[in-house]
Each structure stands twice: as C-alpha cells, then as structure tokens.
Image 1: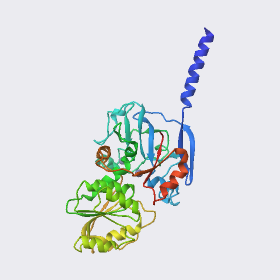
Image 2: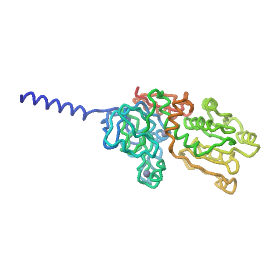
Image 3: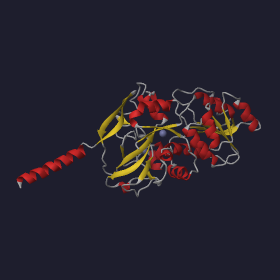
Length: 384
Ligand SMILES: [Zn+2]
Ligand SMILES: [Zn+2]
C-alpha cells in the first residue's frame, strides 16, 4: 500500500514536473542585434488572459527597425529605451486559443472586440494593449493610450515570434473565420492600420488621391481607398513590381517619380491645382516634401510613416502657402472588424502581398529578406 502510494505521488510529481517544464521555441530579443532562438517556458493564463497557439506572425517595419538597432526603440541615451528586454517580438499574429483564464468574458472591449471567446477559437489581436484608465482610453480612443504598450516590445507583452503567446487581459481579441487562408489572416493587423489611414483621409468621389509608397501598408490603403471610389487613385513607388500590384489592386494611375515628372503629371490631371489628398506611407523625408509640392490648396495631407531621421521642409506651405489640413495616423483604431471581413471576402485585395514565409529558426534570413525593400512586400514566420 505504502509502495503504491509512493508510486502515485511520484507520478503526480512527474506529471507536475512535465507541466512545469512545458517549453516552447521563441525568438527572444536580448538587445539590438542580439536576437536568440531559445527554448523558453510556455506561458499560462491568469485572470482575464488567454493563451494562443500561434499560427504565424508577420514582420513589421517596426520589428525590423528594432532588429537593426533603431534609436526609436533602443533610445539615444537620453531616456530609457521603449523596448524592454528580454522580450519576444512580433505583433502581427493569429492563432488558436488553447487556454483561458477566469474572467475573460469581463474584458474591456471598447464596443468592438469579441467577448464570447472559447478554447479552440481562431483569433487575431490588436497590436496595442490599452491601459483602460488614461484619458484617451476613457474617451474610447484606446489606440492613443498613454503607456502605449504594443506587443513584442515589452517583456510583459511578448509577441508572436513564438509557438505560444499570452494575450493579456487588456488585449482586444477578435474571432476570425476558420477557413480564412493564413496569408490573408496575417495581413489583418497591417491592413487595419491602412484602413485607419483611409478613414482619416475621408475620401470622397471628387477626390484625386495620391498614395506615396506601395509596400504592404500602401497596398492595404489602395485596396481600401478603391472602395471609396475617388475620381482618381494614384500610387507612387520606385519599384516596378509594387506599382504593378498597385494597378491590380485598383489604382487608376501609377507613377515612378524617378522616371517621370510627378508634378507635371499631377498638374495635368487636376487642371493645374494639385491632388486633393496626399497619403505619405514611405517613411522617407523626400516623400513629405514631394507631397507638400503636389497637393492643392486646402488639401488633406495624411502622415502615416515612422521616420528614421527628422524631416526638414518649408513649414509655411502648410499655413500661408496652402492652408492644408494635416492628419496624423496611429495604429488601427476600430478597424479590425471591417478588415477581417474585407480580407475574408476578398473585397480587400491581398493576393501576393505575403511574399515570403520563413520558419522561426531562419530568422536571420527572414529579417534580411524583410529589409530588401525591392523584392519583398510582407515577410512572415509560420509555424505550420
Ligand atoms: Zn505592424
Ligand atoms: Zn490608456
């Protein structure tokens, strides 16, 4: 009897030990240029939290800039860095719920995220986990949350560069259709940001709209803008393949500003006035100057990009020169539901945008590919 009991206890201990030792593969950020593929503890769900088995995760320009040691993330020595290590990167991820903590039905959802979630559901999550208590969160504008905690950049908010991820109680989680191809599902986060830019631009049918930059986000804007039926939709890029995609996704005209005179073309199209809307989505200072040059008086200038360096331009164009309306864009406020629907139905075009898939172990090659603006649009990790 004693012996049996002993065995039983041993078994429980072993079982416990197995659970405790449950590990997962993760790409851990330790510092700029210091990313390591490691076996780490698999997270478990506390109050209001859930664990998802990650299907895949896109590499965002922000992830790439962090990998390359960008000062936006690592600081310039004057303030503590935004990135808190060790952390697991990635915020463009989807997966299946495998574990739920108590109280997940009481999560704050800002009237948009899903509450009726259960184990087995396939879900996407917004990149920001809003605090819920700051002025902006209280106003419902959760994307402007002051602590601004985004997945993949904080050690308590590990992202999708791992086999499992913990969705915190603050997170905004959405069910996605079971039969949605992974290539489309992985575009939900970037395309939701694109859609927010188009919302801010308030495009109407008489507008001549110029979208500068036809990478993943620019293409997301093009397909979202097409649905608003502007008079003329124009894409600018220096890459021929991207311009081809832009045409396919509904642009009326595509222009490579290095090959033809952009200003002449825009003036010709607009009776010499300039474009009504200019959306800056390249992150290059020259694209800002170019926009201020070709936009008409009282036009709407939409700024979307993250710049690696300060932009210098003639600020007086905005006021005395043209009386412009300037709109900034941050994240994807309220855009997840429509983006999920649009990508699922195909109303938002996405064929070929996910251009390269890598296993997590090939992370160096994946980041390198992602940095080659010329022949990659969206590089993703998959765990298939
Ligand atoms: Zn992103
Ligand atoms: Zn907040």
